[in-house]
Image (cartoon, rainbow, N blue to C red; front, top):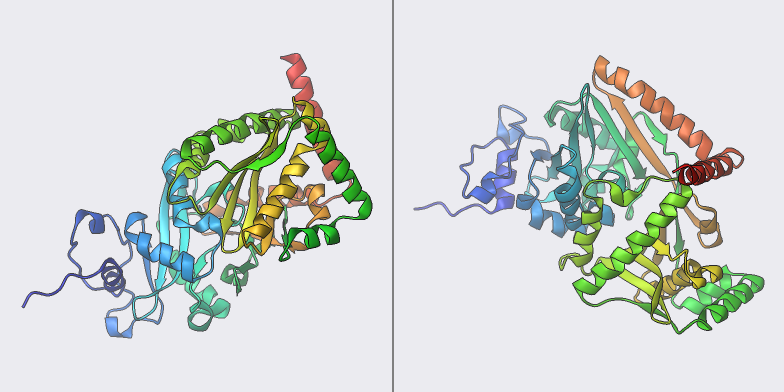
Length: 429
């Protein structure tokens, strides 16, 4: 009697237990499970079985199910990381090394979206998504605390490291202490250090007016009202959410143009000049798979785009990722960025979000809204003498960067000096 074909999940589970599996199709063959058996006797395999994958597609169903049923951030969703790898990671020579932990029934306990970055001297183990992920973290099943837990993760991490392709340095950055409702197991590793910046968020109320009344003093509300009235004198004020891919891309193009002006003024490298970055944002803005997650909108004042926004909605949290305003327009005098922000927070409240996440960065304006400070951490670890040579200066640089950014005296001065340098560069050109 013919043996029924295995599902991709059962096939991956069987491969992780050390069984010899004949690929059933080219798509399954591309899974490229890199690990072999853990022990001579498959029956003696540990409770958590591991597989390492170079391809995303065979994991799609498992990955997206874990997004919905487990805990993760939007920056580790399948649609986000596949877009990043397609437009940026591949150009940078990043090789995915995605680790899946399975229980003995073949259910995914966690996914670690890791990558190997090939360097001239050192190969680096890092998270997929690079600097476009404000939070870097694993995807965790609700069963993870009971079946693995942070106390057992350190030993499991040693096994994981042994299965991964050769690397000299581990550099895992911007990790929050919590992943959804769960403690982040990476906090249990030795050598975890504070990141240079914090992230910030606020807990919304059931209605915007109640929240706004508590957050803003009567004097602030009066100023807000005056600026809104002055803006309305220039034209009707509306937060517009485009409903077609073409209109979303047009709004995003305006945002990127406005943001590029701000980058130049601040003396910051233009994010959209980096290879693949512009395509990444455009891809997600137009994607039907990301339609429920990516929110593109703009503040319309008298038929003109005074400000624009590219945000992320996921698991009851609205993340404020990219925002801009037209610095050359008359509306700039009245704070269109702040008006847009308040419209967005009202929108997030009305659409059932519990949190408004200002994400990474310690900008002063966040203190006006945020009562929750999200501490982020980095884990750096060498695996060879060559790794120590490469990692030493990096650790020192990170420590100096954190000291400057957390200094109330040094950081504002650094920002002013950077802006002055940009101004003189423009004049000199």
